[in-house]
Image (tube, rainbow, N blue to C red; front, side):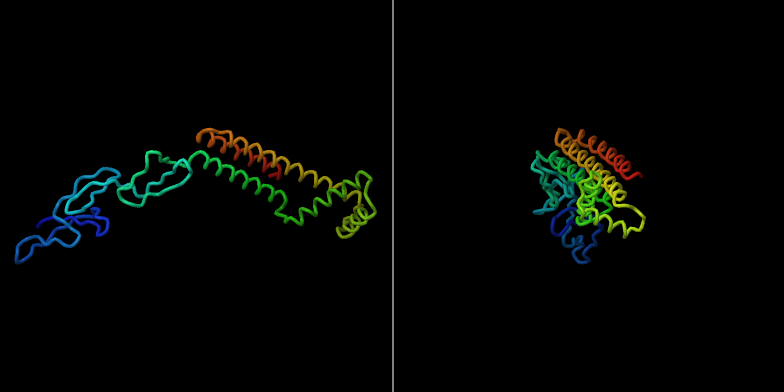
Length: 226
C-alpha cells in the first residue's frame, strides 16, 4: 500500500499521512481530496511544509508569536509565511513599561488612601476636614458660638461625657494623623513617578519597581499599624 500525505484544505500545510487503498480496477492508489503521494520536506522550528501548485514548499511559521514595535503597537502573528520585522521587540518598549509602572504606582497609592480613610466617600472626608478645622479653632480659642454648639451637639449624641474641648482634641489628633499619612503617601507617589521616568533600561526599571513595592507595603503596614 502506498502512503499519501494529507494537507489542510485552506492553508495547504501538512497535517498527517495515511495508507492509500488501491483502486480495484486500475490497481492504482486512491488519493483522496487534499492529499498527495509526494512526500513533504523535513522542516525545522518555525517552518511548515505547504502543498501548493502541485508541489511542497517550506514556508515560515511564526503563528502565535507576539512582538512590539517602538511606537508601542503590539502584534500577534496569525498567518503562515508572516515573519516579525527586523525592528520587532520581544517585549514592550521602555515607554510602555514606564506607563504601566506609573499606573501601578498611582493605583497602589489610591488603594492606600482609600484604606486609610476606611473607604469613606467624598462627603465623609469633607466632614472630617470640617471637623478638624473646627477642632483647631476650639483649641486655639478662636471658635465661634456655632462651633461650640456644633461640638456640644456631637458630644451629646456620642454619650461619652466629653466636653467640646475634649472632643476637639480627639478630632484634631485624628485629622492630623490622616493628613500626615496622606502627605507621606503623596510624597512617596511623587518620588516614585519621578524615579520611574528617570530610568533608561528595562532592567533598572524592573529593579526599581521591586524596591518601590517593598517600601510601599512596609509604609502601608506602618501607617495602618498592622
